[in-house]
Length: 176
Image (cartoon, rainbow, N blue to C red; front, side):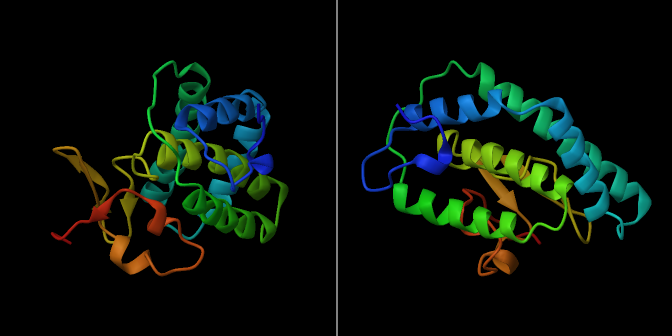
């Protein structure tokens, strides 16, 4: 059985449950210090935001990391179906490029956790990569209605090479 994301053989089929088991193992190796260091990166990343937005951004993502890591470790649901391994490979390559551009230890911690959480969210649960309620510039918010995730920035970001938008199940919020 595979135990690490880095050792996935993309030439064979991979079920959502197999991917979940890999992610559970990786999530169990995340330490509270890494989450706190990742929060340090969020502080760095948000330094130019207005203070009220900065605080909300840091709190939302720190909380999302804590909750999602816990969710992954404790997930007992059954997810049927196969993972699109070509799409997963492309997704992980984007994340690897982001990690390789990291400039600090705290940013590396952020990428380590984000890789686990985003992979779980996008490929096992098939939910929006950003948490519902995430605020974007201009005061726009990612929302969920009637089984659909509406993102206010998807169209603007979908072709950005470093963005994960093309892998996300959300759709452009046409009201924006």
